[in-house]
Length: 554
Ligand code: FAD
Ligand code: NAP
Image (cartoon, rainbow, N blue to C red; front, side, top):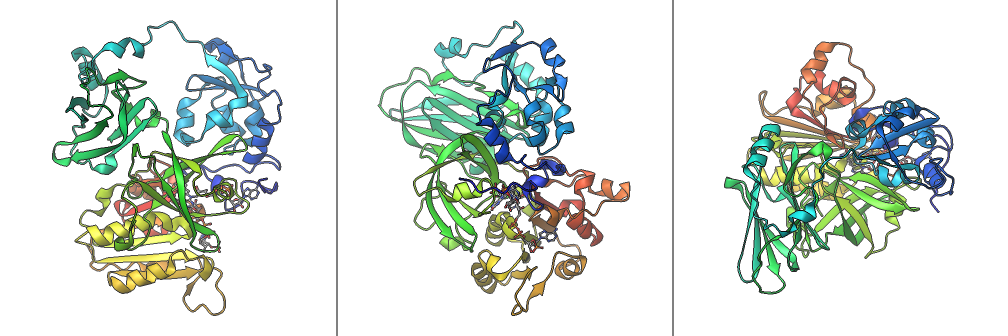
């Protein structure tokens, strides 16, 4: 049984207090937590008022259901009666009512694209929108076509005119034993992180991010291939090669048949997250409540999570798919200890704090070695270009907000020749809460460019280090540049109030000075005025400019 207390929810410190993009959430009534909602959906109660029937909904019909006690919303072509969910919606009833009687897909995507609404709202499903008669593309029709990556000319021109980035193309060729699929991204700044490949059952999927679009190859292969494959990237020409091993050495007449969205360039905001099942390989205690989880990707997946990005883990909890974001780390802070026996790129490590009264983490903690958890493709807008010619790196982490700093530290210390200084200020409650303390101390001893300072908010009387919370006094001492004009990057991650302490901006001048700030984490949007608070404000007062600060927030 999940032991979720029924008092005020979300808890004052819960991530669920603030949504993606910094939108404040409303306090929910007693008995209206996510767990309570899950219980209601399992109770057998008729939540649509249709006694289990699914209907076709016309636009006219949808429009009629626009009141709190009779509210239908369409998301991606499916219509839900969200009235029973009103009181459980963390964003509040008014927010949900904005989509009443209409297509709420865009609104939904702006706020929480990653939330697994299909599972959460499945008992509220009224039916599908009635499709207006149009000529639907029949993918099966194209089955007989030889896939060679070339679009008909008219289609290419039309797409190029519509879309921002140049349209990628693909091609394929074969030897007796191999089939190579080549993707021409028409982008130069690509690497092995830029491509994700999944071959599951009959579907071969390769996705690559092209600016703010996702280019997808999605094919049912014409012949069987072996589980493992290799991926090569030829950076200088923006080419990706996926080399598949044939099961039988026969010549293929065609690559396969196109599946949904094959050879499309889709705006990222319009794409759902793709999940694959990963196996739990090991679980180790790091502190009294934080564990290092190692997950193994399926052999037929190529996925590398870029620095500063997170993924979503998905688990069924009492029959409902629950999704939470986590930031993969490297297995250790020392590059020579990184994944010593395990082959690269097949394993993903996570440092996860288990909240005994949380919804997701106790369930994760209950997984046995060999069990599976679904892992999404990565998200986040941290750009590795932020490291270019970097001289001073300042990291402010609180609690598990340390996780994005792990890869950042590894990368900066090993790959940035211009780097002179890295300073980490790591905030925790007590000494027992400090993640990887001895590794950090050893690393700082070994590499003189690194300084680490621990700050405790609830230390014992023996602690003679720094104490308290993040404050202007602590920060002004911490931020001392080596040279006045050095290239600086500041990364911040921790509990929401740590970065957004509620210090509101008083003048629009400050807002415009910050308007290009990008928040990392589950939000992909530039910071809004209300997000430029707390630590940002402190940093602004210390004369750090907008391009020098990256904040990882919920
Ligand atoms: P929740 O259910 O969200 O509970 C959180 C807190 O609220 C707990 O203290 C819990 O006791 C309390 N609570 C829950 N229900 C109630 C209730 N009814 N009444 C009172 N109190 C209640 N975390 C990591 O550990 N590692 C990471 O790498 C990591 N990366 C992240 C990356 C991003 C981009 C973001 C946004 C968050 C990340 N997190 C990470 C946090 C993570 O996503 C989860 O929020 C966290 O694991 C808690 O999930 P939970 O469902 O177990 O807890
Ligand atoms: P925690 O142990 O509760 O807190 C860590 C430290 O931060 C403590 O010293 C705490 O002080 C302090 N703190 C809390 N609120 C503060 C505030 N308003 N002002 C100043 N200091 C404050 O932290 P945790 O439970 O590990 O939580 C980590 C958080 O990081 C989670 O919210 C998680 O979602 C987030 N996270 C985000 C990302 C991301 O966005 N990419 C990645 C990983 C983690 P007190 O003793 O006073 O509480």
